[in-house]
Image 1 (cartoon, one colour):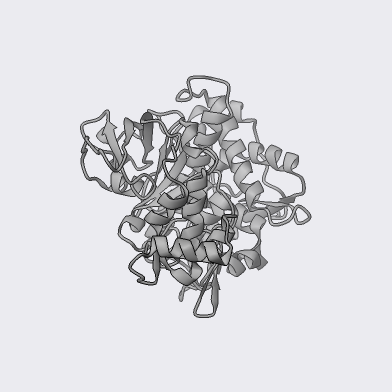
Image 2 (cartoon, one colour):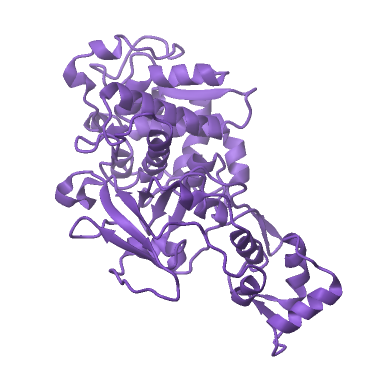
Length: 456
């Protein structure tokens, strides 16, 4: 991997002046994918930073466990089932990131004999050999099976990059076999980084640079150690775009890339409630009712089994999305000159005489603007969303210190979706609720615990 090292490091960590990153930030990223002792389907995060990889993997893991598995008890997994679920999830994300089947999938792992699980990190064996497991998983001593990130204390940033090996596989079936065979590597020291590097090389460094808004912005902040939005988007959608709105936008002659199709799992952020950004429909209404939640510094996951929440887009939801695409500033209105374009985009009658009549009705005071609310009321009145009034919900936060009694467990609750005309229940005003209100403005949350789950 030596010829790729500098490009990978620059893309992930930035062009650091001394050629490395701070030891403390690198150490925070050296963990593997470790399941919680208290919640067999939940991954644990040891320190701040790698949630940018762990939370998307957790979201896809839940999708596969909740909706692709026969067993009714989704919160219980045997060790063998954990292995299958994690590896199929990692394979799915790698397949999504693959730019072209002709270039294949890249697996980044330890050069043979260099794994931190070995008795020493040096070896005279050639690095060109593919890392193989010396023993089958089941025959490894129990203590060696325990994943750890402490072993990485002996592994500096420079040393880590000197003992990596890249292997290419050309088919999806070979990919799944290879990912399965590397289960011990994913769980062990630096498993998160090995997977991240595999995704990056599978996608292609140049492809990622072309999608990121600012190619000089690293995927991991070298000062704080947090993953960028481009990194989260790469893992969730296969595209390293920097924005969360739908489609591309023009700004001062620049084309700014957003999300181009409905995502499998969604993304909501507290930043939208603070009006720093606007998340588009492709993230807000994913294929499965699972959303990664972003705070200023951390990512967690909100999910439910209620598939009606992600049913096909209703005509009014489509109308709202199309209207808002003509309102990039999110003002809640458009100039009346754009009304005909909006009506055409929605296949509404758009003869000039009729458009003129609608303008008069929606803008009786002749202010020159069309408001979203009256527009929806005119063309899509009394539309039932089909969403139930209440449904069970769960929240995941991988950081021990953010969980009750420092046990990584899902927090259970019930969501109430109220109408704007009769909000009779008022629960607490917490960051989790403010985040969810960007999708369901009148949602109320009743948690089974004394305290609301933490976004941080």
